[in-house]
Image (cartoon, rainbow, N blue to C red):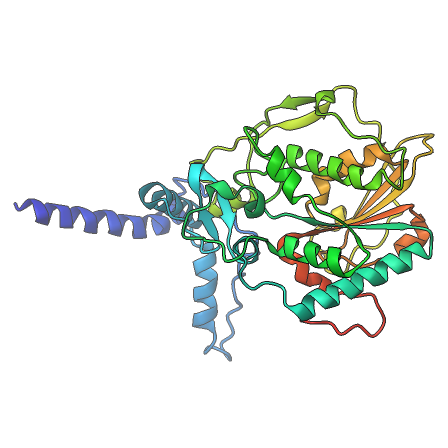
Length: 385
């Protein structure tokens, strides 16, 4: 028999078996499916209504596509094949960089490349909003600081492919900070240069996640302290020598999870654990109501306190980047409250009035800067969508 014909028969046989096996497995249960790695709810089986048959085939097809037996295994195996065979991401919004670094496309890569930059009108609107918050808080005797959290590509750009060339040298965050330095009195904290300087043999961001790791959060916290010490002399810089560097157990990342936890990438980072424990420990919450519809309501409010301390009080408005930096920042304040208000970054006047902090720090992730245009506090603000 012709060898080419044998190969054709084998391909047809394997392909047919792959299609039929889920149907057989659903009856005999030879193999269990793996847990879904998609961050969404699967479609539910539609009700069969004899009086409304027209939409039923489409609805059932959508349901079955989401729920056929071994679906998650098949997707995972296909993703592994595509990564290993072609070094291509099976998901459109993730790119595989050098040394198996994963990056998000969309706004994160656009910010790094300098695409879709903030317009003059957007910069002016954000500047006015931040100036309003500065004046509002200072009338209450509260110091206001603003910090842009660099996205992963803005710091660890060395692993990005040449096809993602930069149109401008500064990122969205740097563009905004430069504008504020020239056109406002807002105390903005620029951490870009310092993070690029500290970047070396040890990563500051996760390879398989789009967040910074403990080292990135630690060095950023010290940059925040450097800016605040002029107004609050009791603030002290942290020393990395006071922390143990511990390799993590079974490290995973949100980008790797989106791909299906393929097991083909290796993470490389360390966790910081204070040798003598944290001075600031978990404190009692005021139980502020979370933002309506917030998908992580348990993360809306976090509190840390140093007992019998006369240091100032801190209120942080942040996003998911606030989680890992919070324990470090809290080491210099008698009470620290962190609010994650569903990426709205509001002034949160009610919380300010109840907490009466000495310092308010607004932290915002670089690719989400335009959210400041949607949720403005100043009266009669023209919100740019």
